[in-house]
Length: 234
Ligand SMILES: [Zn+2]
Figure 1 (cartoon, rainbow, N blue to C red):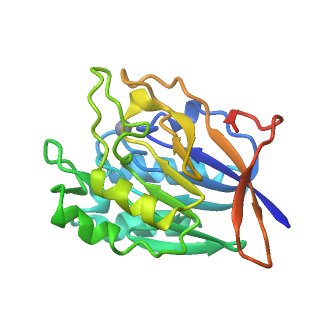
Figure 2 (cartoon, helix red, strand yellow; figure 1 turned 45 degrees about the horizontal axis):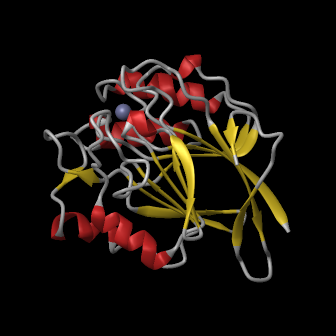
């Protein structure tokens, strides 16, 4: 058995400098690392990530990270790559036998970056997720799970939920809905909303730390409990 420590952060909106992150194996940001999607903010974030004590770093974009969708896209992606950060965008990466898939897409809301219409438009993205994905990373939550706004309205994606129920990843991590930060286990998947800022954009939630065991025989990835994990953990 190999054990890997995965640390999830999200929605830091250029306030990453205030985060305390203990070392681990893979550091994962679930999108919205900038305030307004500027290249300067991206550079500052990339330098912060590069300084963290992890073997691998994975990043997806969020609805604020405009420079990853508009004509600055190549420069933005190159900035992360130059700092040895793996950027995934409807794509996969495998690390230590764990198959990660990441997507910045979320349901349409006030014309932000990476918005798609619910239904056929957004399903085109979820259909690309491989069945054997172990850790699914999307900026937005699935419907009904860690997706409630302050007014109680649930805004997660129904089509994403359906996909998760079909492929059953070991972990699904998201951000986007700041007020629904937390961890929940449901139907064999560990769901994480890793937003570090609260609904008032104040840095108030710690990183989420999850240790996973990878069985080299079956390839199975299982989250395990570790009371000594820093931050919020299983
Ligand atoms: Zn956000």
